[in-house]
Length: 237
Image (cartoon, rainbow, N blue to C red; front, side):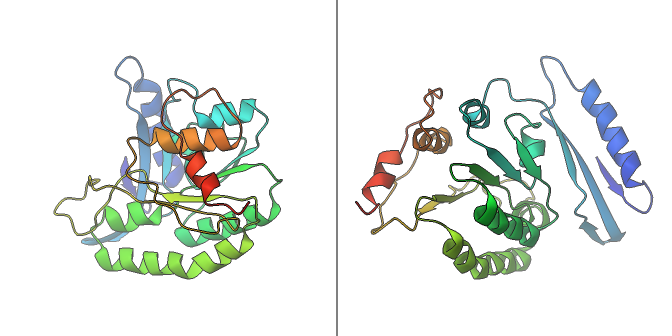
């Protein structure tokens, strides 16, 4: 649901989406109703930061649910709360940009209790640049994240593990504005690593969830192949 904020007030747009969410249920339920407010004048429209997703709950328990049931505190940053409809997300912080998301993540690393799971989504890569075919903006966002990385890595404790990946491709030079199908990277880092390892091509996103479950000692997940052993091989004894 896209609407100009100066014509349709944000509260009204949210109300429309809430009505749509109640209607779009049943065996062919729409996974997400998305409020997409924007500003500007034709043809220079720009999406604003007040996007809001209205999701259906996952059909089964996810990694987040199993972690929470095992006593692991879970933190969602960005639109994680929206994507999972709050399921398994104990603590949530909404953010309006990559920069805010990165700063909130840095603060969480410094303040959350040991043994917690922090799940962050940086929305600008997808919403502002990938879907808008803005290759220059995308490149600048990557440069911004690269400049932030030293702070992030410097804040990690020896027992922390950072995993960087994406949920889909979103090539800003593609002819369409849709998600694209290239493979996405997965990079892992911990201050305890003393050498690099090749994780190889994975079969499924389930591998990431299964690995995180193994690290936290959660055995409920049955899908995916864990690469936790490979991570341990890269750590100092």
